[in-house]
Image (cartoon, rainbow, N blue to C red; front, side, top):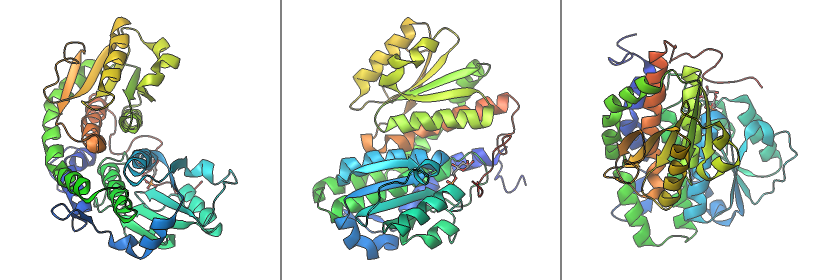
Length: 369
Ligand code: G6P
């Protein structure tokens, strides 16, 4: 087993460190930065359909649902198609309004989740087109979908999803740019610019992993907390949700993710010197606003851990701990900002003596309702 873990103590750590490669594998043969082209063989036959749909509904569960929320942001921003993201378990029991003009994207690492399968079947009956975004090749969901994009992250053993999540986000990024290109929602020069940056993401993820020792120190400082809040805005809001989910799954610490601006409508009441608050505060359009949220937490003596862009000074002066990550285009921040949050959850769980690869009560894939 030690061999299978590639020298790491746990599969989860091995899989966290595989991310530069798994993201690269997901993009391989699909993006052409020099010419500004995206090619997705698995959905090619449905290109005409993609040009004519009115709406996209993303269905998923757990971490895959968080990837869906990042996908919503990317698809709306670049392809300008309205997107709704639904928990598969809620969607299927709601008598949802679905037509032939809808595209349903089902996201699932295992490709076997019962609720997601049932949501697909319902949408199919109502005439929607189904794309699967799955990791396990040949699983049930890819088989029942009309078309799809495999994430190619390789087998994921740790129950808490890490590399499958970043590969899902990568695949959704490709779908967003492909749809944008086909529907004429993006200029060729912009696409060249974005794809060039996207192509560099695996290297930036590699650099982000260098924060590991520092994250371990932060983990040691906050490991005894009973609660933890994660805040972010825009596409970093789903990153906050995912950071909170990772922590709660493997360390059993109660954690919540919230859009930073919603803090004042509830979570702010929880903040005292005992409460660690993790902010995703990278340099992009909502930076100033997140900085003022950090000030609000500090004014109430909360402990601030901030994920910031390299070279940041403002947040550094306010936060108790900062974790620097490489600067990238706003569209790609989730792929980088997720890394330190995975490491934080991992180290805290290990320090608390938890079974990180097989947390209590959780299953890798949930094939019953
Ligand atoms: C389980 C796993 C999660 C996963 C979710 C959805 O709860 O523990 O890690 O995100 O199922 O699984 P799927 O295979 O559909 O992505």
